[in-house]
Every structure is written in structure tokens, then in C-alpha cells.
Length: 351
Image (cartoon, rainbow, N blue to C red; front, side, top):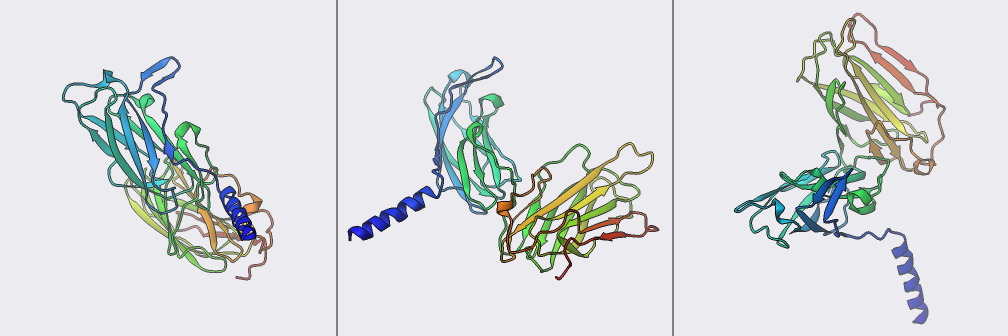
């Protein structure tokens, strides 16, 4: 019996030390804030309690208690409006993001509520609670971080939560839906895209791009596709007709991930660059995949700023390829020009 207890204790210690100790309660916010000599007391402070730890594509509820910290923000018969802001790339909200805190707002008065969200991506994602009229400096900010496999890394005040380099998009068993991280000043399109079925080594998947024009391309749009460790089975059609701001386009492409130990990348470059056109706009949509040893998808992202995957994250069941793209395809908008397809597979294609 003593031996059994000793074995059980050893197992429990191993399990408890294999996961980070995450504090699900966040509180102790500073009552006064300042930056470069500007600031003052917060209108309210608070405590947040995560009912469960965030998990990919799973609803997570967070309870909060706000407490009046300074009465200077109060007016008779006033209702405080508290707005919750977040990044739609990382989370999908369930329920309210605007909260109405009625009187009284005397010192120490409290307001209780909760918000609920679904994690969509790895990385660090924050939530900001700000009272109308109080300014962002006085806001309460919390955050959490998940790694590329959906494991929780950290929860806490936004300023204290560490980031994570890989912003992978979580997926179910059927398909993957991507939303754009952000839109730059020279972006030609706002995009979303879908991969269905999930990428798998040696199998065919379709990538469908949904593009909404943010500028005019009166002579059409040039397309260039770079494929790294992907075999392109079918190409998107030319964009040879005029595109006007607000137009929606759909591009389809079929690909097969090849059995190579490396990241698998499909990059679509779009441009309306024309002679004498001062309003040059570009677009780039990247899709980067990493696989498991059995050929299934481990994680996937569309982050153009991401560093290459660490070697420890790559499967060791496949050979390494040589440097360079497998295929470069240019699809000009001008129908009189040929589609240029350059292939130089780094490993003989056996798929």
C-alpha cells in the first residue's frame, strides 16, 4: 500500500509540473495611472475571474466585479457606459460588449457581470474595458496567451502577459476559416479565405479566397502565386475585367501538400500596378502549414510577419527539401499574355 501511494504521489507530481500554473483571477489594478506626467485616478478598478482556462474554439466565460474608485466621474442620475473592445482576429465574442452601470456611483459601489468569448487563434489577445468619457489611459486591460497547439501560456494584466510569435488559426475537423489580421494603407483587397478539407500530406484541398476591393483596378489585377512544398493542381482564373472599389471576387485554387520536412506555404500576390498609375495598391495573402508525422495538419497561419517555424515543431518523418520555391506562377491580367509557370521541385514529386 505504501508503494502504491508513493507511485501515485510521483504521478501527481509529474502531472502537476508538466503544465504551467495559471492564475485564473486577475485583480489588484493600480488606482492611479500616469504616462509622461499625464493621468490620474481610474474611475473604477476591478477583479476578473476566468471560469475555465481558454481553449481553442471553446466558449470561455469571465466574471468581473467593478468597484468605483473615484467619484469625480459621477453625475446625478448618471449611467456609466463601459465598452469592451477586442481584436476580432483572435476571438469571437458571445453576448454583450457594452455594459450599463446605473447609479449609485459612490466610492466603493460595485457592478457585477461577465463576458464570454471563443478563442480563434494562438498568440496574445487582450480585452479592454473603458468608460465613455474617461479616456483609454484609465481603462482596465487583461490578456491571455495560447501557443500554436492551443495550450495556455499566460493570463493576467495586459502589460504583464507575454506574447507568442505564432498566430495560428485554430480549426475543426471539417475546414479552416481565416480572417484578415489588419489592413494597411496600400492594401488592394480586404480578404477572408477558407481551406476545405483540411490540408493533409498527399491529399487535395481547395483554397477559396473572398476578396473585397479597397481601390480601383480598371485594367484588372495581376496574380502571382508562390508555392513552397505544395503542388498546385488548379489555378485561379485571371482577373482581366475592371475591378471597382467594393467589388467582391472569389478565387479558387487546389493544392496538394508534399511529403517534405518543412513549412508548407502558398502565397498569393495581387497588384493593380499600371503605367502612370499613382494609386498603386498591392495585396498579399499567405498560408503557412506545419504537419504531424502522420501527415495530418498540426497548425496553420496567415501571419506575414511570423518567423520560420522552429525545427522542433517540424515532423521528422519526411525528408528535407532544397532551398527555394517549388512553383512560381504568374497569371497576368492581360489575356494576350501567357500564364507563366515555373517548376523546380526540391524533391521529386511522388504525390
